[in-house]
Image 1 (cartoon, rainbow, N blue to C red):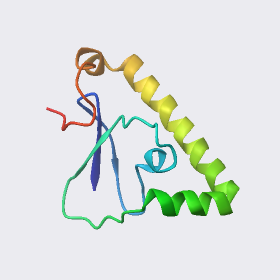
Image 2: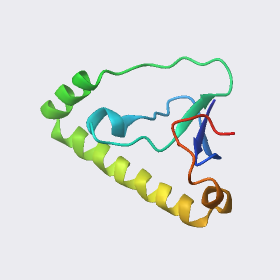
Image 3: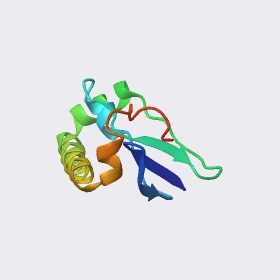
Image 4: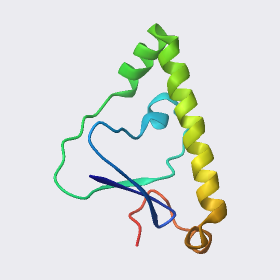
Length: 100
């Protein structure tokens, strides 16, 4: 199980078959907004940006699907920040560091 944190608040948990980090793979200017922590021992797979970009250039529909997912997750981030009192208080924290 992976625990996902944003602005010092756990926002979700992910399990088998789920993924994260796709936005940073396809957009070099993407600023990471969340941190992920393994809650127990797990097996993760790493993808290289160059490989993903090559596949996306060969399959534009994959690029479109990743873009759609990134936009949806951006909307969730904005919603979280607008409604979470804790996120309002800890907004100054670097989201790439482990939450406290």
